[in-house]
Image (cartoon, rainbow, N blue to C red; front, side, top):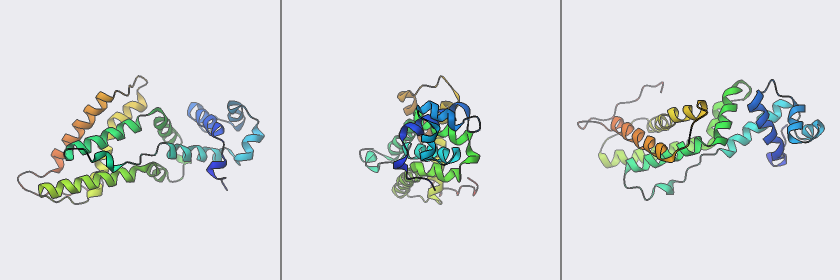
Length: 214
């Protein structure tokens, strides 16, 4: 059984995360993690039964430290739906391109087969909270403009994926990627404008349902 997270020294998790990112799970040994942390292997085993338990602890901590829980109050001063969604998109982009979050994503990608229920781990980062906020914004927009939107949660989830996909991929793959806030804001504005143009019906028609596989 895993020890409570509070009993797991941060310096051990830091050392393990560095080693797993640098060499991968298979090529990293407990001896190397101990050496990186500046302790004996016995000390590491005092907290973690084996390397897999330590790896899962690194993943759990990564999920908790990259939490994306969103404060709806940040939208209170926005003038309209477009500004609200643009703010959500910018916060997502800034949060998920931070080095710590990217390191967590790289571990998930590299060692996804060793992580039980990887999608659940990702959801623990607070994705559902953000989707709830976007759902509420879209619901208000539909009421204001007199149209109906089926599968609101699906539309909200699609918005977050569209907002993040391109920029996050560049951040993961491009060593020269820069977190330029002006560019991130421009991307957030553009994605929001395109998304709303697509979701709002034309000529008074209701929005069409999304395909079930989205």
